[in-house]
Length: 445
Image 1 (cartoon, one colour):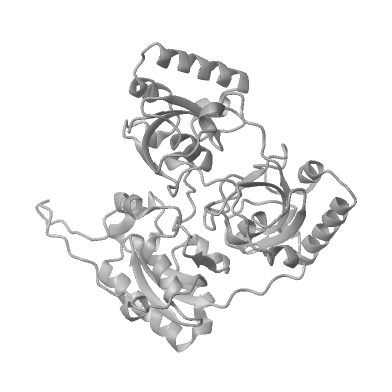
Image 2 (spheres, rainbow, N blue to C red; image 1 turned 180 degrees about the vertical axis):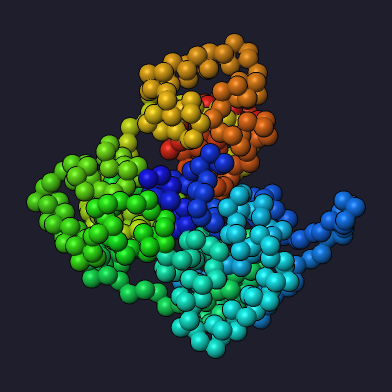
């Protein structure tokens, strides 16, 4: 399952890529720079007159909790739950997946409802779960699990700012390009007795580190109840106690010397890694569920431990980095230091082992991919225009327009993509592999 562990994306890998890898069922509060959010939709609403002439923009009703946002003391980390209430003019931000309740709602309607929800929360902070279930239009909020927000989290800035200025059991409102967020800070959930508390108590390393993991879930896990995981006949009748027993048994086998990759194949419910034993890359900036990232940054080489997330149990083992793909530009990827900001274009080519949704990549074999990559590089070296080849071949629908991607270390792209982009010289062409295929990339600025 690719790309779930960004809290409200779907299963456990890198955040995927552009339009090709958007999760259709979730609102993505994370991983967007303010500029990227602004390109999705204006935060102002507008109306059109009966004659088809655009009327002057009407600013949305201002509800932000300015007294809370103005505080000088901010938390370093906060767990929050929220009710998202949107309105019809913000539909473009949801890329076709706005909650139907918002389709006919005006900004005034949304503001009235948000104020009513806030009043209910202020009267009874313990009502947050009921209010989320009844009103929230963010599917990720309905798992019952809080979002963990810190200064390095890549949530949209307004959401992050309110979260870090709230006090526990306090509620407030902030507006983002997705709508009004009626938010309450909650106490951190208590650790599960099965978790490897001794490992989690260590200082975090910086990474990058690589970890293999076994995902074991159960019928009432928050992400299962929230519809963020596809149906599974075995898991959907499993109790938490049964999942705990499986975790204990797997940990005992690892202690006795069992092979991690073998156990992954036998037990794991993450189809993105169970069959090939593939490790995931963990860094401080990685967009992963906080508990998964916390464990990944604290394991010693060869060590294993267990941690719980909304998706279930993760039995994790730190391993060495995987060998580079034979097609990758290893010499470029070794360069230091990387640039701070670049613009790149790329040609995405998938195969049956790693692809976006383009049917060409889904059907292509690895041998066919290798030939296509080599032939494409030869065409570019002979002088074919990059834009023309990109329009012809690339399986990234969002990148075929010819407009380059702006890349920084904080950009919302797979780490591998950023690693190559920030090391290319202007006009140079290189190759890197990510969760969605092979990227033939050139730096344009």
